[in-house]
Image (cartoon, rainbow, N blue to C red; front, side):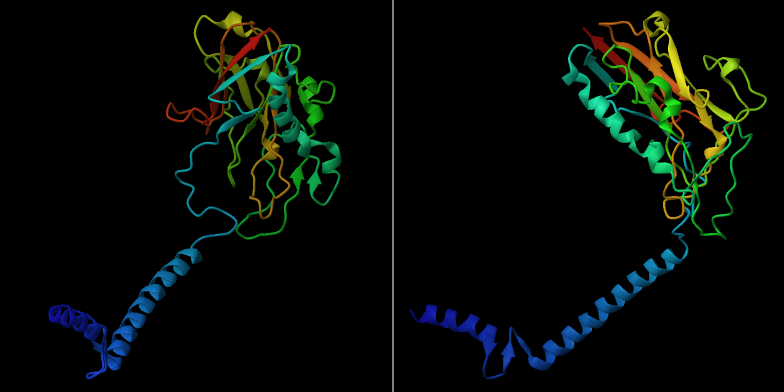
Length: 302
């Protein structure tokens, strides 16, 4: 019994020793000194951390990326987005392709003519401009840039105006393709225009255009893909829409689009298609399926 009392008295004395006026083995002045030390120590660490972050921020620009020397060429993406690079639907069942048409309708809303009426934000760019449109240096001029107009009507039967199902109802689906944005990036056309192996025919090559071309992914399946029609600016991305200056000074920027219309896909068969753009500074990569290209499998059932 006495041993328990001595044990209880031991830990109680450690918590608070009334004779030495110590709390947890330290006097008030000792606690003050150690707390002051850690306050100064961690305050200095915080100051060093904040200082290095501020120094780093001074080297960065809110308008342009500081380091772009290792930026990959732009990715090529399409709408509707495919799940695991597959688009499958039943042309006689609206519910199977409704998610695709809804995403395309939503995506094209900003390309309506009514949205692009403000002359202070949008401008008409020549349809066959021979080069990109230079809108002052971003480092020296931070004023707002106007965006080139791009009307969805340029996409023809794939605009969704006459056919809100974008061809899915008839088993002739459309895909809307765009090059992803990169600040200050200017695609270059290969001149003189070469005959791209497996690429667009010379008739579709222009000195002011980055051509897009789609074909069968697997050899021997040319007949499964059938005829492909391209809508937009001659089936490519015109140079006058570049460069993009960033969301702070170019918030209304509209990426040029190309609509791909598959008019004779083989039904009840997995059709694998690869699309890519051809430019002097646009490369593809086997590690990135969307760098300058994409592939998609389309399956249409009845």
